[in-house]
Length: 205
Image 1: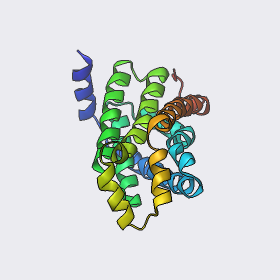
Image 2: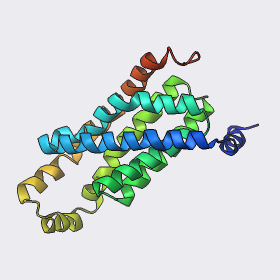
Image 3: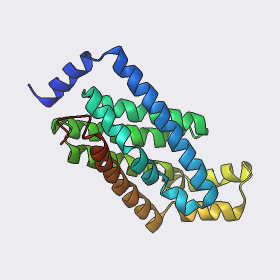
């Protein structure tokens, strides 16, 4: 049986408790993401660029726990999908390209990780890519729709200096730096999770 067929079979064996677990932990994850995002944004735009890395270092354990506890295809992408939608809804940033970028990345990452039996390196790299997708998806307004969004930001009361700083820290080397640090943070978060959870899961590799 190929990995796709196995994944479909897995998805048919979900239990209600597993959906509840993912929903509760995704809500916590979304709230933490929102909180860290707000704090870093108030401190400095450059620090805000690194907020996904901070989130992943703190919450990588939760992501790994969900994957190992549920152990079914769709656990990662469902968790990420629910958390990004909650984050977007609570923050008022219901920006479709950001949500789609993160969800599509999580689906691709999960497909690869599932094929490798959710081993730690595959989960770590996949989660790193998901965190990098947060950065790229969040910068899409600046990268592709700058003029339209500049007017929107002005109408929302943002001054020229704030807009200039936001644009500067969302493009070029800052974008590459943010994605690289977020990718690394995702890997570190999962590896920390392995250390924390190794007493709770016998086969954690």
